[in-house]
Image (cartoon, rainbow, N blue to C red; front, side):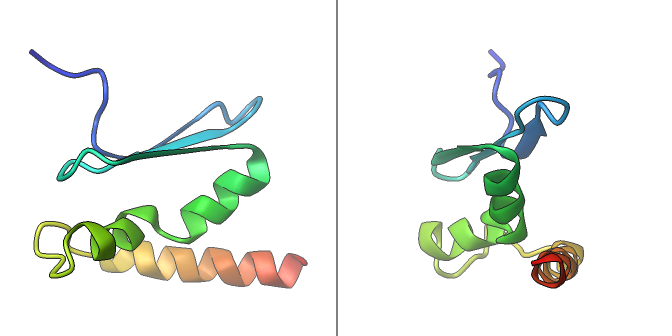
Length: 83
């Protein structure tokens, strides 16, 4: 049986009210944020890597993708410059 949820970060509703869901495939933890600003802040923190440090301190089952870190850093710099 397949589940309607897929592990990872999912963002929807970009035309109206954005909703971001993060589901950990390892432990099943789920976090949801709504609203344009909250979703932007949540994605800038790279929730998969942030959760991996708490879920599995060795982070062996959650390797950090290097592109995601660089993307989050660019997004944070853009947000800081806009403020």
